[in-house]
Image 1 (tube, rainbow, N blue to C red):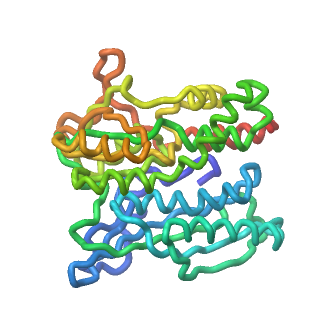
Image 2 (tube, rainbow, N blue to C red):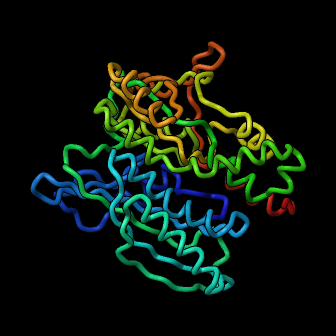
Length: 347
């Protein structure tokens, strides 16, 4: 796969990964799946072990502190879909040879701080430098938590009739990272105000507070964090994981001026690009007001954008009164936009 490919396609996952999952253990309640954020294992006495894995970020144009933030919180966002806070993490660092000891100290200090702030203990891993490592990925990590088995939410548990609530706005992380990675170009073409707004959005890329506030109501049935594929991609993945249809109103999708400006400059659709910081939730119809109120109490914007339907109805997007099939794209346009800007010499 090329640097533009991002995650493996759904078809590739089904054909290559799912048939080859090692030894089959009966206590695995939720294993790998399309649109599934966490695995859940029954470890006895009514307790479940939930875990997730993700790449670690190291983006020179973004900065060491910011890269550490993404490394911790992109994993934490996956764990947040359980309705609980992560507890432990293991990290494998395959560092590029250009990274000095001083730079690594800064990076790791921030990883430590961000983990400590959300109650995550770093329990082990591996650290090394790899010749030829020049990507924006510095390895990978796994986060884990334990919780009462019946209280762990998974993204495949949505039901027909559940409302779809999404927090914050589309393309939060895409707009923030692109603007911060190419500050001169963004300020020159869009102005300092848009750039400053995107910088301010960066630390909204954690959706852990969103998930905990919503789950506390007992009205959330399932959650899926918005990563590659954007808000609409996350909704589609969640419907597939739950074997449901979905109906989304395009005009209801929450958007922000800064995201519109930046994604427009980079030629990508804000609805379909990486949107870490937003959380998609399947909410019981009778729980709409409770969930929106709980999020509002934490000053978290939340919007009802549609509902899950019976699977036979498929994925539908209503735009300007037209009810049409909802597109799903295997490749997130963010990656081509980022590396394309680097090739153009944008700064």
